[in-house]
Structure formats: C-alpha cells, structure tokens
Length: 209
Image (tube, rainbow, N blue to C red; front, side, top):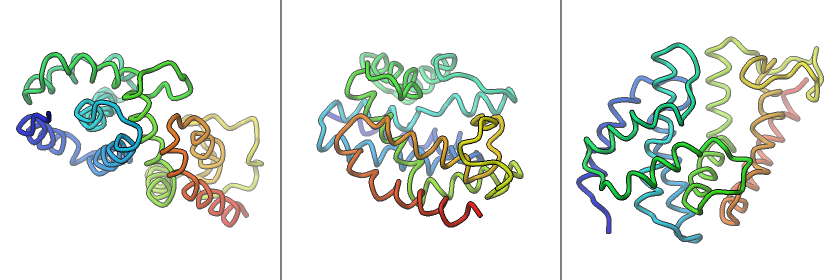
C-alpha cells in the first residue's frame, strides 16, 4: 500500500531542492529514473513503493557535492536522505530499505544486491542512454567547455579518464555511457536499452570526424 501523502510531500521537497541543479542530475532526471524504475518493476516485481521513493532521492549526494565543491559519495550522505524521508513522513521500516538502495545505486558493476536496488540502478543507466542521455551529455560537456569531438585522440586512447579528462563528448559516450549498458541487470531494462545504445553508437560514428 502506498503512503500517497508522503510521496506527494517528498516530490515537492525534491523539486525544491533540485530545481536549480544544472549538471544533468535535475528534477527531470529523477522523474525519468522513477518512471523507468516503475516500468521495470511492473514486469520484474519488487517493492514498488521502495523503488519509486529510492529513485526520487538517489542523487541527493549530488546536491551535497555541489555545496561542498567536491564530489561526495552517496554513502556519505545517507543522514541527509534519512532526514528528508522522515520529514516527509516515509515509514520508518521502509527508510532502511531505501537507504540501502541509495547507498549502493552507483555500484552498478556488482551483481550482489537485492532486486529493488538493481531496478533503480538499471533505471538510472537507462536515463543516460538514447536521446535523453545524449542531451544530458552534451549539456554537461557544453557547460564544462568540452568539445563534441576531438580527433587528435583515438576513441580507445589511454589518456581518457572519465570525469577527469573526457577529451570530447564522443569519447565520453564511447568509453563510459555505452559500456554502462553492459551492466544492466534486468531483462526488461536490457530490452529497453537496445535502441538507445544504437542511437548513441550512430552519434559517435557520425560526429567523430
């Protein structure tokens, strides 16, 4: 059974917190991840309530990172997430499950978590793929003055270090975003990703010139 008042309060709270976020992890991203997660859950199972709320709060550490001017891990911001969940009236017995998902949602290469965690991870990966993911990538690169293409470096060059030296949008898509599709866990997410990956591959093919 959903606690609808708690979800409504949480949505309003998250919107206010993220409305000025401009790194690609804004409120629209959180809503898309939640919608992806709900779609996956309908076919794969799992606790829908926990999954939906976890998707809404999974990037709180991004806000903390912005405030501190340096990256902060999700696991180091669980106290902030817990405070928000309590303020919005989320049930105590559910908060522990949600915090577990938030803590581990970025550990996408590990196949050791419960179904709810894997669904949120898959939903997050899916939002970085396809047309939406491309827009997010290009927006981020434009903000950080990273060119769309840089043919001085091969796509497989050793100088590429994600988030530190992306070189170009094409390098980031080729080396980071597309490979993330290999770590999707659920059958539903893998099916959803096929066309999205192909689109990104075509973008790199036509723009790495």
